[in-house]
Length: 200
Image (tube, rainbow, N blue to C red; front, side, top):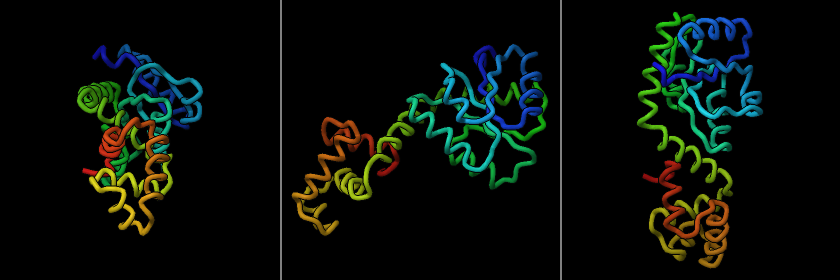
């Protein structure tokens, strides 16, 4: 249980934050409470597991912040009486687990410990995916199309035919795309595309 020494709690409800902090302090877990993601961003922690109240768009925003910082923390989402589709959406968005509030301190500690165990297997892969997606988001729509063509193994001529542009224009988009991705050569760009789940 000592591996969850630091819990990053994000919840805009003051009373709930206080209740969770109090419940977990008995279990030797240090809780860093934050009202929102903007507050977290101004005092970025070094390590920990995130327990976030599942507001609309909160997990997406948190993952974008992690991508900007180049660090991934396992995310456990929570809300009151969550519907199954809400839990599924949170997991698809990047949460590693979901708990229903209110929850007892012992049950929550156990859920966090299980989440940490699962996170050890996916942490680096998830960070690479988050970082790759953040890089790909810098590209224009056309540069992404060129990246898709490159990742599919197409030549400049074939990419040009597919996009109805000249091979020379493809070359320009390709150079811009490599620069924005921070890729020194095409194989780097393909790896980033794979990590961002653009191609299988």
